[in-house]
Length: 99
Image (cartoon, rainbow, N blue to C red):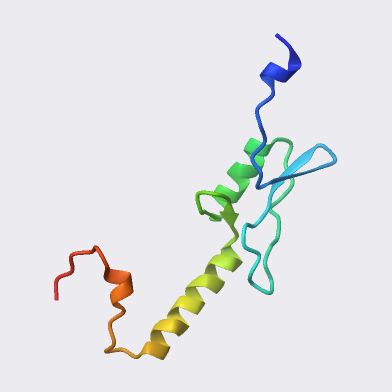
């Protein structure tokens, strides 16, 4: 078998540097975002590292813990601005709720 047929395609969220692999934070929004995870010997190990560090997979890439906290804090601020009694019906569309 040729070397090319054994080669798996590396996901786009993986950064390669000096034959080491790291996962890049997809959104990089928080001021103290980690930007990249730890560099590992394979991209599979790099992906395992972010899973162990509780990064969130978005379906397209990984979001570091710091950026996840940033997103949650912004959601909380938005809810506070709307007030405690104003329901956000946009969040409930298609969801049967019991009141």
